[in-house]
Length: 323
Image 1 (cartoon, rainbow, N blue to C red):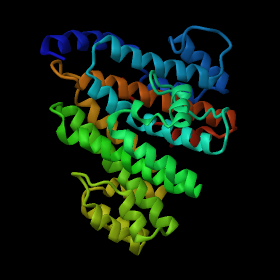
Image 2: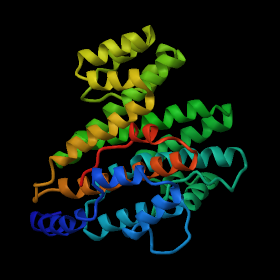
Image 3: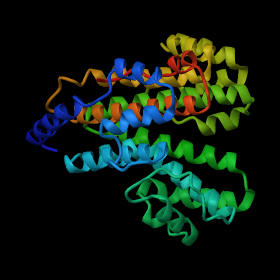
Image 4: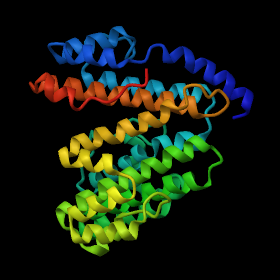
């Protein structure tokens, strides 16, 4: 996008920002009695397509789709949209491969995607039509499908495609001229590396498995991280503290859900810096990420209420808001 286009798009986003949930709004949602009451509050605020009597996942999916349509309508560069949807895209590929391998065509665990949603991704895998995928996916998709057919090992499939996804994000982060997109992508890869390392240490993965799973990136020396994982979780914590992730370690020692909250809050702190930038993609991407955070928080609150969790449990898991 040109500078003048960004200025117009950011002006449109400024209007949208007024409808974002605030921390006070989220506290109000936490205090509501049921998931239906929360859902009613959100639909009254314009979430979903305005239809009545829809369930939580339908409304949240409609809200996610609406945000992607907004990015398209503002003329946001394809490179930016590709990074924002990368994990959902690779998730859909993993899900399709597993569904085809198990001869299931009723798999519902797909993210909505304007081009590579459930039906198209299933068709591509069934027909081995991998050249219809983005260039960074074509070769690895074929290899992953062959792996699944040969071994039936879903965990190895996940590891292979999760690594490929992070490599693709890191590749764009390292080459893009968009400063904010590069910072966001770099943070996304780094926090995901930490998640992989922690899970690998707890499950006692081999050194070779760890090194295969961790993508090379500009924030964390993955060889040092892999060596720490091979020793154990305490060694991982010690290394993370040394390289500037003390807050992440404190969250991890509390619980994994608190660490995921830390990841989301760290992204939120970064994107808040874009509120007053009017000549780049920053405010547009920041608004989109803020909406995704809202949707995750709404899902956490409604799911907790549906399952009878107390307000104290919900409160410790809710994310910072952008509004």
